[in-house]
Length: 331
Image (tube, rainbow, N blue to C red):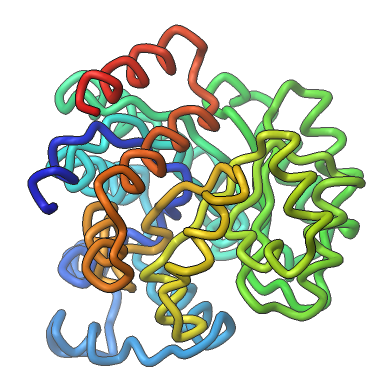
């Protein structure tokens, strides 16, 4: 099964670049930028990853990214992720980044996006990994802040394919950002939003994603299975659901293998992704392997999940078909 998973060309649609910040890189960037860390070794950093729900994870996540200061830092962060992705035969990525988490620390928007774009261009040339960038808004900040960052992004629209919504979901519904996402749509950007597993008012948030925001994709979205009408509508629209099994096991103590299988049986376009792999200690292949090892997923099911990712990606039609044909040849 590991060999089968490795040989599949794969697309990753739900990975936070800041969540690929490995402990060794945290130390290297801290040293380069003269930042003191409360840990003596990378192993101590990993030992501090004590999270059991979304808020406890976010507390550690935002603290660690303080080492990201310069354009070179963002380049190195991003290229290191692409290097790991390429080693697992991930050929296409739509990564997220969170500019508000950096501008709030005094890092300029252009510093962030220039570093990321350099790495994207180099990864395409040297590693053969294509990518298109998604800018996320932090839902626990104001809609005004989100709109201000959308305006910051306007000179860089050719660097972006879409916008997303992430961070603490409690009392921060999609409706809060309806105007921002309508503006993003008018600018020609695709739309996606996190609907994290087992959050407060989660079914209403999924409904707002569908009916108010009219998203092109939903990140996570597992709880849609609790409502027949939501499942039917997601399937009817052919919307992708970017599920992150190992992340789910950390945050909700459940790999959600049964739920992913139910999605497939209902014709829902579930995909598998790594989310924040440096923190959950699992990149793309490890997530697929976990489904095979712990939930009994077959090669046919793994292939369906992989095909779904290309089908719901925001690749141009010709590039999408290229990879679908490659997968068909392996079936």
